[in-house]
Image (tube, rainbow, N blue to C red; front, side, top):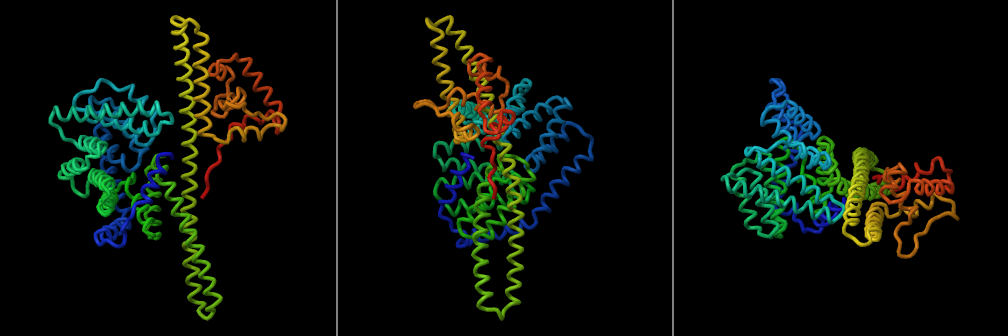
Length: 507
Protein backbone atom coordinates (compact mmCIF):
# COMPACT_ATOMS: atom_id res chain seq x y z
CA UNK A 1 0.00 0.00 0.00
CA UNK A 2 2.82 2.44 0.78
CA UNK A 3 4.02 2.45 -2.81
CA UNK A 4 0.53 2.51 -4.38
CA UNK A 5 -0.96 5.72 -2.90
CA UNK A 6 1.92 7.98 -4.09
CA UNK A 7 1.36 6.63 -7.61
CA UNK A 8 -2.33 7.53 -7.37
CA UNK A 9 -1.47 11.01 -6.12
CA UNK A 10 0.96 11.51 -9.03
CA UNK A 11 -1.71 10.49 -11.53
CA UNK A 12 -4.34 12.64 -9.82
CA UNK A 13 -2.23 15.78 -10.21
CA UNK A 14 -1.67 15.29 -13.95
CA UNK A 15 -3.54 17.83 -16.11
CA UNK A 16 -5.61 15.71 -18.47
CA UNK A 17 -7.45 16.55 -21.67
CA UNK A 18 -9.87 13.62 -21.78
CA UNK A 19 -13.01 14.59 -23.69
CA UNK A 20 -11.32 17.53 -25.46
CA UNK A 21 -8.77 15.73 -27.67
CA UNK A 22 -10.21 14.04 -30.75
CA UNK A 23 -7.56 11.27 -30.80
CA UNK A 24 -8.24 10.45 -27.15
CA UNK A 25 -12.01 10.61 -27.70
CA UNK A 26 -11.72 8.16 -30.58
CA UNK A 27 -9.56 5.76 -28.59
CA UNK A 28 -11.93 5.89 -25.62
CA UNK A 29 -14.90 5.11 -27.87
CA UNK A 30 -12.99 2.12 -29.26
CA UNK A 31 -12.11 1.02 -25.74
CA UNK A 32 -15.76 1.25 -24.68
CA UNK A 33 -16.75 -0.98 -27.61
CA UNK A 34 -14.14 -3.59 -26.76
CA UNK A 35 -15.07 -3.64 -23.07
CA UNK A 36 -18.65 -4.47 -24.02
CA UNK A 37 -17.26 -7.50 -25.89
CA UNK A 38 -14.69 -8.42 -23.22
CA UNK A 39 -16.36 -11.70 -22.24
CA UNK A 40 -16.11 -12.87 -25.86
CA UNK A 41 -12.34 -12.30 -25.93
CA UNK A 42 -11.86 -14.06 -22.59
CA UNK A 43 -13.92 -16.91 -23.99
CA UNK A 44 -11.60 -17.10 -27.01
CA UNK A 45 -8.59 -17.46 -24.71
CA UNK A 46 -10.32 -20.18 -22.68
CA UNK A 47 -11.26 -21.98 -25.91
CA UNK A 48 -7.58 -22.08 -26.93
CA UNK A 49 -6.71 -23.60 -23.57
CA UNK A 50 -9.52 -26.16 -23.86
CA UNK A 51 -8.36 -27.17 -27.33
CA UNK A 52 -4.83 -27.84 -26.03
CA UNK A 53 -6.28 -29.86 -23.14
CA UNK A 54 -7.79 -32.27 -25.67
CA UNK A 55 -4.23 -33.20 -26.70
CA UNK A 56 -1.99 -35.63 -24.77
CA UNK A 57 -0.86 -34.13 -21.44
CA UNK A 58 2.79 -33.70 -22.44
CA UNK A 59 5.09 -31.27 -20.65
CA UNK A 60 5.13 -29.01 -23.71
CA UNK A 61 1.33 -28.88 -23.85
CA UNK A 62 1.13 -28.22 -20.13
CA UNK A 63 3.54 -25.30 -20.46
CA UNK A 64 1.55 -23.95 -23.40
CA UNK A 65 -1.62 -23.98 -21.28
CA UNK A 66 0.24 -22.34 -18.39
CA UNK A 67 1.47 -19.53 -20.66
CA UNK A 68 -2.09 -18.85 -21.81
CA UNK A 69 -3.23 -18.75 -18.19
CA UNK A 70 -0.40 -16.45 -16.96
CA UNK A 71 -2.16 -13.13 -17.76
CA UNK A 72 -5.62 -14.64 -17.22
CA UNK A 73 -5.83 -16.85 -14.11
CA UNK A 74 -2.75 -16.96 -11.90
CA UNK A 75 -3.75 -20.01 -9.83
CA UNK A 76 -4.43 -22.11 -12.95
CA UNK A 77 -1.12 -21.03 -14.49
CA UNK A 78 0.76 -22.06 -11.34
CA UNK A 79 -0.92 -25.46 -11.35
CA UNK A 80 -0.09 -26.14 -15.01
CA UNK A 81 3.52 -25.11 -14.46
CA UNK A 82 3.67 -27.51 -11.50
CA UNK A 83 2.26 -30.33 -13.64
CA UNK A 84 4.86 -29.59 -16.32
CA UNK A 85 7.63 -29.68 -13.70
CA UNK A 86 6.36 -33.01 -12.39
CA UNK A 87 6.47 -34.42 -15.93
CA UNK A 88 10.31 -34.36 -15.67
CA UNK A 89 10.75 -33.65 -19.37
CA UNK A 90 14.35 -32.61 -20.12
CA UNK A 91 14.58 -28.87 -20.56
CA UNK A 92 10.86 -28.18 -20.60
CA UNK A 93 10.44 -28.87 -16.89
CA UNK A 94 13.31 -26.48 -16.14
CA UNK A 95 11.66 -23.78 -18.24
CA UNK A 96 8.36 -24.38 -16.43
CA UNK A 97 10.14 -23.97 -13.06
CA UNK A 98 11.66 -20.64 -14.18
CA UNK A 99 8.34 -19.32 -15.41
CA UNK A 100 6.58 -20.43 -12.23
CA UNK A 101 9.12 -18.48 -10.14
CA UNK A 102 8.47 -15.38 -12.25
CA UNK A 103 4.70 -15.68 -11.82
CA UNK A 104 5.01 -16.21 -8.07
CA UNK A 105 7.07 -13.02 -7.88
CA UNK A 106 4.53 -11.12 -9.99
CA UNK A 107 1.65 -12.00 -7.67
CA UNK A 108 3.64 -11.19 -4.53
CA UNK A 109 4.40 -14.72 -3.25
CA UNK A 110 8.10 -14.02 -2.69
CA UNK A 111 8.78 -16.73 -0.09
CA UNK A 112 7.57 -19.48 -2.40
CA UNK A 113 9.50 -17.97 -5.32
CA UNK A 114 12.77 -17.88 -3.37
CA UNK A 115 12.23 -21.44 -2.13
CA UNK A 116 11.68 -22.74 -5.65
CA UNK A 117 14.68 -20.79 -6.93
CA UNK A 118 16.93 -22.78 -4.57
CA UNK A 119 15.65 -26.01 -6.16
CA UNK A 120 16.46 -25.03 -9.75
CA UNK A 121 18.88 -27.34 -11.59
CA UNK A 122 21.91 -26.17 -13.54
CA UNK A 123 20.74 -23.61 -16.10
CA UNK A 124 21.30 -24.42 -19.81
CA UNK A 125 22.17 -21.52 -22.12
CA UNK A 126 18.85 -21.81 -23.95
CA UNK A 127 16.95 -20.73 -20.83
CA UNK A 128 19.28 -18.09 -19.45
CA UNK A 129 17.25 -15.17 -20.83
CA UNK A 130 14.10 -16.52 -19.16
CA UNK A 131 16.09 -17.21 -15.97
CA UNK A 132 17.64 -13.73 -15.76
CA UNK A 133 14.24 -12.18 -16.47
CA UNK A 134 12.54 -14.23 -13.74
CA UNK A 135 15.20 -13.41 -11.16
CA UNK A 136 15.09 -9.73 -12.04
CA UNK A 137 11.32 -9.76 -11.51
CA UNK A 138 11.68 -11.60 -8.18
CA UNK A 139 14.29 -9.28 -6.68
CA UNK A 140 12.72 -6.13 -8.14
CA UNK A 141 9.28 -6.93 -6.71
CA UNK A 142 10.81 -7.99 -3.38
CA UNK A 143 12.76 -4.70 -3.17
CA UNK A 144 9.57 -2.66 -3.59
CA UNK A 145 7.77 -4.66 -0.90
CA UNK A 146 10.59 -4.81 1.67
CA UNK A 147 9.81 -2.92 4.89
CA UNK A 148 13.45 -2.42 5.89
CA UNK A 149 15.69 -0.27 3.71
CA UNK A 150 18.65 -2.61 4.16
CA UNK A 151 16.71 -5.44 2.54
CA UNK A 152 15.26 -3.18 -0.15
CA UNK A 153 18.75 -2.00 -1.13
CA UNK A 154 20.12 -5.56 -1.21
CA UNK A 155 17.24 -6.79 -3.36
CA UNK A 156 17.59 -3.76 -5.65
CA UNK A 157 21.29 -4.50 -6.24
CA UNK A 158 20.51 -8.13 -7.05
CA UNK A 159 17.75 -7.08 -9.45
CA UNK A 160 20.12 -4.71 -11.26
CA UNK A 161 22.75 -7.43 -11.48
CA UNK A 162 20.32 -9.85 -13.15
CA UNK A 163 19.16 -7.09 -15.53
CA UNK A 164 22.79 -6.39 -16.49
CA UNK A 165 23.38 -10.11 -16.99
CA UNK A 166 20.35 -10.38 -19.29
CA UNK A 167 21.44 -7.44 -21.43
CA UNK A 168 25.05 -8.65 -21.57
CA UNK A 169 24.03 -12.20 -22.49
CA UNK A 170 21.76 -10.98 -25.31
CA UNK A 171 24.43 -8.64 -26.66
CA UNK A 172 27.05 -11.38 -26.59
CA UNK A 173 24.83 -13.86 -28.44
CA UNK A 174 23.13 -11.36 -30.74
CA UNK A 175 19.68 -12.03 -29.24
CA UNK A 176 16.82 -9.55 -29.16
CA UNK A 177 13.91 -11.12 -27.22
CA UNK A 178 11.18 -9.00 -25.69
CA UNK A 179 12.82 -9.34 -22.26
CA UNK A 180 15.92 -7.61 -23.66
CA UNK A 181 13.97 -4.58 -24.83
CA UNK A 182 12.12 -4.26 -21.53
CA UNK A 183 15.37 -4.23 -19.57
CA UNK A 184 16.90 -1.70 -21.94
CA UNK A 185 13.84 0.53 -21.52
CA UNK A 186 14.07 0.25 -17.73
CA UNK A 187 17.79 1.11 -17.81
CA UNK A 188 17.26 4.10 -20.11
CA UNK A 189 14.41 5.41 -17.95
CA UNK A 190 16.57 5.14 -14.84
CA UNK A 191 19.03 7.56 -16.51
CA UNK A 192 16.19 9.83 -17.81
CA UNK A 193 17.29 8.92 -21.34
CA UNK A 194 13.76 8.96 -22.67
CA UNK A 195 14.68 9.18 -26.35
CA UNK A 196 16.62 5.92 -26.11
CA UNK A 197 13.74 4.35 -24.18
CA UNK A 198 11.33 5.33 -26.97
CA UNK A 199 13.72 3.92 -29.56
CA UNK A 200 13.73 0.56 -27.75
CA UNK A 201 9.92 0.51 -27.69
CA UNK A 202 9.96 1.24 -31.43
CA UNK A 203 12.32 -1.67 -32.06
CA UNK A 204 10.21 -4.05 -30.03
CA UNK A 205 6.86 -2.97 -31.44
CA UNK A 206 8.09 -3.40 -35.03
CA UNK A 207 7.93 -7.13 -34.29
CA UNK A 208 4.44 -6.97 -32.75
CA UNK A 209 0.85 -6.34 -33.76
CA UNK A 210 -1.92 -4.63 -31.73
CA UNK A 211 -3.53 -8.02 -31.08
CA UNK A 212 -0.50 -9.45 -29.23
CA UNK A 213 -0.08 -9.35 -25.44
CA UNK A 214 3.48 -8.00 -25.70
CA UNK A 215 2.09 -5.06 -27.68
CA UNK A 216 0.00 -4.08 -24.64
CA UNK A 217 3.10 -4.31 -22.45
CA UNK A 218 5.22 -2.07 -24.68
CA UNK A 219 2.34 0.35 -25.28
CA UNK A 220 2.17 0.70 -21.49
CA UNK A 221 5.95 1.23 -21.31
CA UNK A 222 5.65 3.90 -24.00
CA UNK A 223 2.85 5.62 -22.07
CA UNK A 224 4.97 5.78 -18.91
CA UNK A 225 7.89 7.27 -20.89
CA UNK A 226 5.66 10.01 -22.29
CA UNK A 227 4.30 10.71 -18.81
CA UNK A 228 7.84 11.19 -17.50
CA UNK A 229 8.53 13.51 -20.46
CA UNK A 230 5.46 15.60 -19.54
CA UNK A 231 3.62 14.76 -22.79
CA UNK A 232 0.22 14.09 -21.26
CA UNK A 233 -1.76 13.64 -24.49
CA UNK A 234 0.62 10.98 -25.83
CA UNK A 235 0.66 9.38 -22.41
CA UNK A 236 -3.16 9.11 -22.48
CA UNK A 237 -3.23 7.76 -26.02
CA UNK A 238 -0.72 4.97 -25.44
CA UNK A 239 -2.26 4.06 -22.09
CA UNK A 240 -5.62 3.52 -23.80
CA UNK A 241 -3.98 1.55 -26.64
CA UNK A 242 -2.44 -0.75 -24.04
CA UNK A 243 -5.83 -1.23 -22.37
CA UNK A 244 -7.52 -1.97 -25.73
CA UNK A 245 -4.98 -4.68 -26.58
CA UNK A 246 -5.45 -6.23 -23.12
CA UNK A 247 -9.17 -6.58 -23.83
CA UNK A 248 -8.57 -8.03 -27.31
CA UNK A 249 -6.18 -10.62 -25.90
CA UNK A 250 -8.55 -11.71 -23.12
CA UNK A 251 -6.12 -10.43 -20.44
CA UNK A 252 -7.40 -10.06 -16.87
CA UNK A 253 -4.07 -9.01 -15.30
CA UNK A 254 -4.51 -5.41 -16.44
CA UNK A 255 -1.83 -2.84 -15.72
CA UNK A 256 -3.47 -0.02 -17.69
CA UNK A 257 -7.27 -0.28 -17.29
CA UNK A 258 -7.38 1.04 -13.73
CA UNK A 259 -5.06 3.92 -14.73
CA UNK A 260 -7.43 4.81 -17.58
CA UNK A 261 -10.19 4.84 -14.95
CA UNK A 262 -8.14 7.27 -12.88
CA UNK A 263 -7.73 9.62 -15.86
CA UNK A 264 -11.47 9.53 -16.51
CA UNK A 265 -12.05 10.33 -12.83
CA UNK A 266 -9.61 13.26 -12.99
CA UNK A 267 -11.52 14.63 -16.00
CA UNK A 268 -14.78 14.43 -14.05
CA UNK A 269 -16.19 11.66 -16.26
CA UNK A 270 -17.53 9.57 -13.37
CA UNK A 271 -19.68 7.32 -15.55
CA UNK A 272 -16.66 6.18 -17.53
CA UNK A 273 -14.52 6.00 -14.41
CA UNK A 274 -17.12 3.73 -12.79
CA UNK A 275 -17.35 1.43 -15.82
CA UNK A 276 -13.58 1.16 -16.15
CA UNK A 277 -12.88 0.54 -12.46
CA UNK A 278 -15.72 -1.97 -12.27
CA UNK A 279 -14.16 -3.78 -15.23
CA UNK A 280 -10.75 -3.69 -13.50
CA UNK A 281 -12.17 -5.05 -10.23
CA UNK A 282 -13.91 -7.88 -12.08
CA UNK A 283 -10.67 -8.78 -13.87
CA UNK A 284 -8.69 -8.66 -10.62
CA UNK A 285 -11.14 -11.16 -9.12
CA UNK A 286 -10.63 -13.45 -12.11
CA UNK A 287 -6.83 -13.15 -12.12
CA UNK A 288 -6.54 -13.58 -8.34
CA UNK A 289 -3.38 -11.71 -7.23
CA UNK A 290 -3.19 -9.70 -3.99
CA UNK A 291 -0.74 -7.21 -5.53
CA UNK A 292 -3.26 -6.26 -8.22
CA UNK A 293 -5.99 -5.86 -5.57
CA UNK A 294 -3.69 -3.51 -3.66
CA UNK A 295 -3.26 -1.33 -6.73
CA UNK A 296 -6.96 -1.14 -7.60
CA UNK A 297 -8.64 -1.01 -4.18
CA UNK A 298 -7.70 2.60 -3.21
CA UNK A 299 -8.90 3.98 -6.54
CA UNK A 300 -12.07 1.87 -6.44
CA UNK A 301 -12.88 3.34 -3.03
CA UNK A 302 -12.31 6.89 -4.29
CA UNK A 303 -14.57 6.43 -7.31
CA UNK A 304 -17.22 4.61 -5.27
CA UNK A 305 -17.37 7.41 -2.70
CA UNK A 306 -17.49 10.06 -5.42
CA UNK A 307 -20.40 8.25 -7.00
CA UNK A 308 -22.12 8.06 -3.62
CA UNK A 309 -21.72 11.82 -3.18
CA UNK A 310 -23.01 12.41 -6.69
CA UNK A 311 -25.94 10.13 -5.91
CA UNK A 312 -26.77 12.08 -2.75
CA UNK A 313 -26.79 15.33 -4.70
CA UNK A 314 -28.94 13.73 -7.35
CA UNK A 315 -31.43 12.53 -4.76
CA UNK A 316 -31.64 16.01 -3.24
CA UNK A 317 -32.40 17.57 -6.61
CA UNK A 318 -34.86 14.80 -7.35
CA UNK A 319 -36.93 15.47 -4.24
CA UNK A 320 -36.82 19.20 -4.93
CA UNK A 321 -38.38 18.49 -8.31
CA UNK A 322 -41.01 16.31 -6.62
CA UNK A 323 -42.04 19.20 -4.33
CA UNK A 324 -42.03 21.84 -7.06
CA UNK A 325 -43.35 19.83 -10.01
CA UNK A 326 -45.80 17.34 -8.59
CA UNK A 327 -47.64 17.34 -11.90
CA UNK A 328 -44.77 15.50 -13.59
CA UNK A 329 -45.08 12.48 -11.30
CA UNK A 330 -44.55 10.01 -14.09
CA UNK A 331 -41.16 11.49 -14.95
CA UNK A 332 -40.20 11.48 -11.27
CA UNK A 333 -41.05 7.78 -10.95
CA UNK A 334 -38.81 7.02 -13.89
CA UNK A 335 -35.98 9.00 -12.28
CA UNK A 336 -36.44 7.13 -8.99
CA UNK A 337 -36.20 3.82 -10.83
CA UNK A 338 -32.98 4.98 -12.46
CA UNK A 339 -31.65 6.10 -9.08
CA UNK A 340 -32.52 2.74 -7.53
CA UNK A 341 -30.70 0.95 -10.30
CA UNK A 342 -27.64 3.09 -9.65
CA UNK A 343 -27.85 2.32 -5.92
CA UNK A 344 -28.01 -1.40 -6.64
CA UNK A 345 -24.90 -1.11 -8.79
CA UNK A 346 -23.13 0.79 -6.01
CA UNK A 347 -24.09 -1.88 -3.48
CA UNK A 348 -22.67 -4.53 -5.81
CA UNK A 349 -19.41 -2.61 -6.12
CA UNK A 350 -19.24 -2.13 -2.35
CA UNK A 351 -19.67 -5.87 -1.92
CA UNK A 352 -16.69 -6.42 -4.22
CA UNK A 353 -14.71 -3.87 -2.24
CA UNK A 354 -15.43 -5.72 1.00
CA UNK A 355 -14.07 -8.84 -0.68
CA UNK A 356 -10.95 -6.90 -1.66
CA UNK A 357 -10.55 -5.66 1.92
CA UNK A 358 -10.63 -9.27 3.07
CA UNK A 359 -7.75 -9.99 0.69
CA UNK A 360 -5.84 -7.02 2.12
CA UNK A 361 -6.33 -8.42 5.65
CA UNK A 362 -4.72 -11.65 4.45
CA UNK A 363 -1.89 -9.53 3.06
CA UNK A 364 -1.36 -8.07 6.58
CA UNK A 365 -0.98 -11.61 7.90
CA UNK A 366 1.76 -12.17 5.30
CA UNK A 367 3.54 -9.05 6.62
CA UNK A 368 3.46 -10.52 10.11
CA UNK A 369 5.05 -13.69 8.79
CA UNK A 370 7.81 -11.61 7.18
CA UNK A 371 8.49 -9.85 10.49
CA UNK A 372 8.72 -13.18 12.31
CA UNK A 373 11.13 -14.48 9.67
CA UNK A 374 13.17 -11.26 10.03
CA UNK A 375 13.34 -11.69 13.84
CA UNK A 376 14.58 -15.25 13.51
CA UNK A 377 17.24 -14.25 10.99
CA UNK A 378 18.32 -11.26 13.14
CA UNK A 379 18.49 -13.41 16.28
CA UNK A 380 20.53 -16.05 14.49
CA UNK A 381 22.88 -13.34 13.22
CA UNK A 382 23.43 -12.07 16.77
CA UNK A 383 24.19 -15.64 17.91
CA UNK A 384 26.83 -15.93 15.22
CA UNK A 385 28.27 -12.52 16.04
CA UNK A 386 28.37 -13.48 19.73
CA UNK A 387 30.35 -16.61 18.91
CA UNK A 388 32.77 -14.53 16.88
CA UNK A 389 32.97 -11.92 19.65
CA UNK A 390 33.99 -14.55 22.18
CA UNK A 391 37.00 -15.23 20.00
CA UNK A 392 37.89 -11.63 19.15
CA UNK A 393 36.40 -9.21 21.67
CA UNK A 394 37.83 -8.40 25.10
CA UNK A 395 34.33 -8.00 26.51
CA UNK A 396 31.99 -10.24 24.46
CA UNK A 397 29.07 -9.78 26.90
CA UNK A 398 29.15 -6.02 26.41
CA UNK A 399 29.27 -6.56 22.65
CA UNK A 400 26.17 -8.77 22.77
CA UNK A 401 24.33 -6.30 25.01
CA UNK A 402 25.06 -3.55 22.51
CA UNK A 403 23.77 -5.64 19.59
CA UNK A 404 20.65 -6.55 21.54
CA UNK A 405 19.93 -2.87 22.19
CA UNK A 406 20.11 -2.28 18.43
CA UNK A 407 17.88 -5.33 17.90
CA UNK A 408 15.30 -4.07 20.42
CA UNK A 409 15.29 -0.59 18.88
CA UNK A 410 14.85 -1.85 15.30
CA UNK A 411 12.16 -4.30 16.31
CA UNK A 412 10.26 -1.69 18.35
CA UNK A 413 10.29 0.87 15.54
CA UNK A 414 9.31 -1.66 12.87
CA UNK A 415 6.50 -3.11 14.99
CA UNK A 416 5.08 0.30 15.95
CA UNK A 417 5.20 1.38 12.32
CA UNK A 418 2.80 -1.48 11.50
CA UNK A 419 0.75 -1.11 14.71
CA UNK A 420 1.10 2.53 15.83
CA UNK A 421 -1.73 2.25 18.41
CA UNK A 422 -0.47 -0.99 19.96
CA UNK A 423 0.55 0.52 23.33
CA UNK A 424 -2.82 2.24 23.86
CA UNK A 425 -4.78 -0.81 22.60
CA UNK A 426 -2.76 -3.11 24.84
CA UNK A 427 -3.24 -0.92 27.94
CA UNK A 428 -6.98 -0.82 27.24
CA UNK A 429 -7.00 -4.56 27.99
CA UNK A 430 -5.46 -4.05 31.46
CA UNK A 431 -6.81 -2.79 34.75
CA UNK A 432 -6.20 0.99 35.13
CA UNK A 433 -3.60 0.62 37.87
CA UNK A 434 -1.61 -1.98 35.89
CA UNK A 435 -1.22 -0.12 32.62
CA UNK A 436 2.29 0.21 31.23
CA UNK A 437 3.89 3.50 30.16
CA UNK A 438 7.38 3.31 28.60
CA UNK A 439 9.99 5.46 30.28
CA UNK A 440 11.29 8.52 28.49
CA UNK A 441 13.70 7.42 25.77
CA UNK A 442 12.24 3.90 25.59
CA UNK A 443 9.93 2.70 22.82
CA UNK A 444 8.66 -0.60 24.23
CA UNK A 445 9.18 -2.07 27.67
CA UNK A 446 10.10 -5.72 28.14
CA UNK A 447 6.44 -6.59 28.88
CA UNK A 448 5.21 -4.74 25.78
CA UNK A 449 7.91 -6.35 23.66
CA UNK A 450 6.89 -9.85 24.84
CA UNK A 451 3.26 -9.24 23.96
CA UNK A 452 4.25 -7.62 20.68
CA UNK A 453 5.73 -11.01 19.75
CA UNK A 454 2.51 -12.68 20.95
CA UNK A 455 0.60 -10.30 18.65
CA UNK A 456 2.76 -11.53 15.75
CA UNK A 457 1.79 -15.13 16.51
CA UNK A 458 4.86 -16.27 18.49
CA UNK A 459 3.21 -18.07 21.43
CA UNK A 460 5.90 -20.29 22.90
CA UNK A 461 7.68 -18.74 25.89
CA UNK A 462 10.83 -20.61 24.92
CA UNK A 463 10.81 -19.04 21.45
CA UNK A 464 10.19 -15.56 22.89
CA UNK A 465 12.99 -16.10 25.38
CA UNK A 466 15.34 -17.12 22.58
CA UNK A 467 14.54 -13.99 20.53
CA UNK A 468 14.74 -11.54 23.45
CA UNK A 469 17.66 -13.24 25.27
CA UNK A 470 15.79 -13.98 28.51
CA UNK A 471 15.36 -17.16 30.50
CA UNK A 472 12.12 -19.04 29.62
CA UNK A 473 10.99 -18.81 33.26
CA UNK A 474 11.38 -15.04 33.14
CA UNK A 475 9.17 -14.82 30.05
CA UNK A 476 6.62 -17.13 31.66
CA UNK A 477 6.51 -14.99 34.81
CA UNK A 478 6.09 -11.77 32.83
CA UNK A 479 3.19 -13.27 30.88
CA UNK A 480 1.55 -14.62 34.04
CA UNK A 481 1.82 -11.26 35.82
CA UNK A 482 0.21 -9.39 32.94
CA UNK A 483 -2.57 -11.96 32.48
CA UNK A 484 -3.45 -11.62 36.16
CA UNK A 485 -4.26 -7.91 35.75
CA UNK A 486 -6.31 -8.26 32.54
CA UNK A 487 -9.70 -6.57 32.57
CA UNK A 488 -11.54 -9.49 30.95
CA UNK A 489 -9.73 -12.22 32.86
CA UNK A 490 -6.55 -14.06 32.02
CA UNK A 491 -8.08 -16.90 29.99
CA UNK A 492 -9.07 -14.72 27.04
CA UNK A 493 -6.37 -12.06 27.35
CA UNK A 494 -3.80 -13.28 24.82
CA UNK A 495 -6.49 -13.97 22.22
CA UNK A 496 -7.52 -10.32 22.58
CA UNK A 497 -3.88 -9.23 22.18
CA UNK A 498 -3.62 -11.18 18.93
CA UNK A 499 -6.64 -9.27 17.57
CA UNK A 500 -5.09 -5.83 18.09
CA UNK A 501 -4.89 -3.94 14.79
CA UNK A 502 -7.01 -6.42 12.82
CA UNK A 503 -9.81 -4.00 11.93
CA UNK A 504 -10.73 -3.97 8.21
CA UNK A 505 -11.61 -0.85 6.25
CA UNK A 506 -15.20 -0.87 5.01
CA UNK A 507 -16.60 0.97 2.02
